[in-house]
Image 1 (cartoon, rainbow, N blue to C red):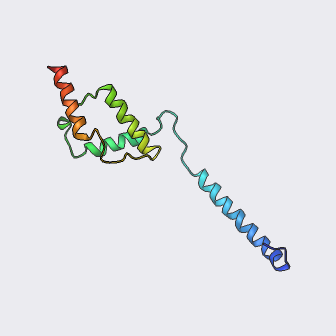
Image 2: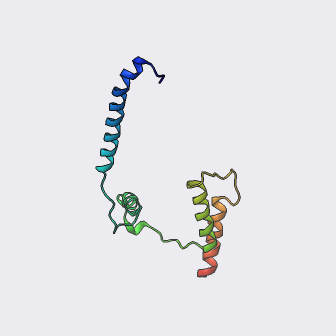
Image 3: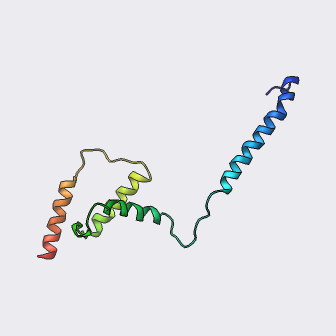
Length: 113
């Protein structure tokens, strides 16, 4: 604001309002719950999402899939690129899901006989 007589009279009002806003913000921060040191970060979300997924399904309907290490590394890298770096893969892409599942079936059939 310019240094004028009218603005000088307004200054205490704005200063008071600014201080009240700061107090509200700092008071809100003090009301937050402290973190518990014995619970891992992000653990609650992981358990909550697992519980939501399994609420309507029986555990015996799930299949435990063992993913080969190279495929697992590729999937983890893709997940990090997409979620953390915001990089998307151009489509159509090779190998596609069908190719990956076919290779996995071949891998399991050779391994298990």
